Amino acid sequence: GAGVSQTPSNKVTEKGKYVELRCDPISGHTALYWYRQSLGQGPEFLIYFQGTGAADDSGLPNDRFFAVRPEGSVSTLKIQRTERGDSAVYLCASSPATRGSGGELFFGEGSRLTVL
Amino acid sequence: DAKTTQPTSMDCAEGRAANLPCNHSTISGNEYVYWYRQIHSQGPQYIIHGLKNNETNEMASLIITEDRKSSTLILPHATLRDTAVYYCIVLSMSNDYKLSFGAGTTVTVRA
Image 1 (cartoon, rainbow over the protein chains, first blue to last red):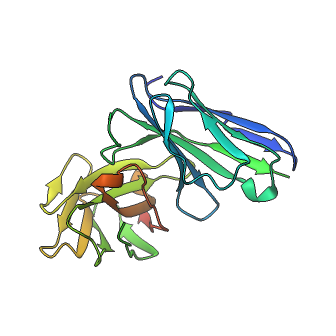
Image 2: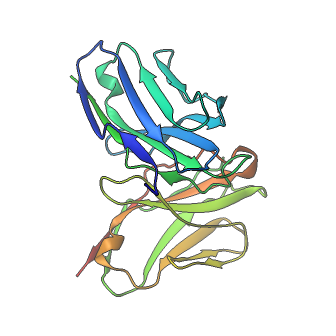
């Protein structure tokens, strides 16, 4: 498709389980970003990839969160030992910029994670 | 990045111009003003950005005061589909991937 694609759109899991969220960026976009949005709040930065490498992972809340982008295209956000506080919409974005984003990011519709 | 202050909510009439204010009194010289919006259940959508000159595109106009301490996003002819949360973001070009969204302004366009 033409836009950023995220799967699953909805995920319900139990506390303590492992979860993977996938992001397919716009073809040709070298930069990829993950944000998290809790109910009633604006999105918060998690991690930024330039190509295959994480250029900035300072927004990851703790070591239960990890993201990869092995071939510089699709990215997976991995959450271990999920907690109820991890419940949120996880948003992926991409941009064509080779240095930073130029501020114009293209967002997907998000993956809604609910931890029971 | 500088903080921004926006009204929590505002209503506007369909077909009329919507003027959305934003204060960013601590903005510095290498920081841009960006606007995004988020329609319910969708990801944020880029609208427009500027440094010090006024800007216009097919979606909106951005008016930045001469001292750059505030700006206004103008939707010239609001439609029901413009109902969304609008975020004013100050972004440093040295760190330009870290958008800090804040709470935004919930804009409701009424028929």
